[in-house]
Image (cartoon, rainbow, N blue to C red; front, side, top):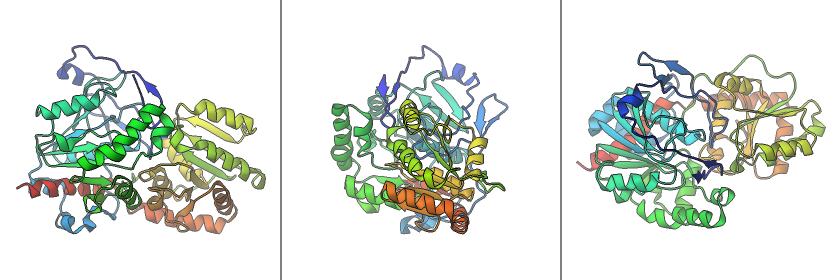
Length: 461
């Protein structure tokens, strides 16, 4: 049993007996179709499709959008700019890639980090690479499965996944292939100490205050000490990929890692996020995310309550699930806002797209984001955003152009009021938000990420 770093929920993991990989893959391991309205920098899950082998397979990566900005701007990666994933892999000799991650895409608490990994690994697998992910167990799920071509091994529980993975690495069972990707989500795997192959790290953001928000005092201090002091010296020579320039600045400043080793590769936006034809007839504010401390939905509710007197017809939807639901429901009751602020829980993909298209504005009061995928999802639907001025948001939102960044609750009230009141402003922001979102696609994200790994493999020749 352990407490989730990002949401504080206590999760129980169970052993799996003697199921073989063959037995496990013989079962229907379809992916749960739900929106990551519960996510850390959340985005909706693609629709599940049934394949001939009986497994639930997710729709492949979107390649319909422009290439967009990112890693290819770096001089060392420019040679790869015109290469496909297949060509990058062949040039660098990348055939088998190991991936280590805390959580799997099927985990009930999976969010933006897991979606990001899934999209990239799917694209690599579709290009012919052998990709194998090692992660923690998922209650009620098989220990082995194949998803979109890549293999997932759910080894042990949330705590033990870290030492077990490191032991496997020391013994040569992991990190001895053509390449390794470590997903550093709060607690690191310390891959520089045991991986023999070329390697990179996905690090979306520094956790900082999140440790204190969700863990008991002793554990929070230990987690923060590992992140701030123990891990950085180990990773000083490691190439790190993060989602935004603002997150890169924070990683460099807080973890004291060399800026030259941190590459920005923005996340993609699915093509099905697109403008609709009908907005809500009344002012509608939408927020999407897990109901967990880091999202600070209590502040958003307080903001909406302050906004209501000037917008009597105002409606608000906070889509997502999480252990803070009782507290938020009580706050809504206390404010007498049950009739106009709703908490629908998880919404499926179609419902999420409909919310984005009907919303007049999307809001976020989050304290920590690597990017803020809901912002660019909404933007792709032609909907502007009013969000907190934090790392991640500072790249996802172009202040005053695609939405507004806010330093205080009062500023958020003021900016929401402006967007809801001024139709010309709202449409202008929505149009530019759509243009901004069109720069980002998952194919470019996957190619740029592989190019960073390829550069490390080529160095070792």
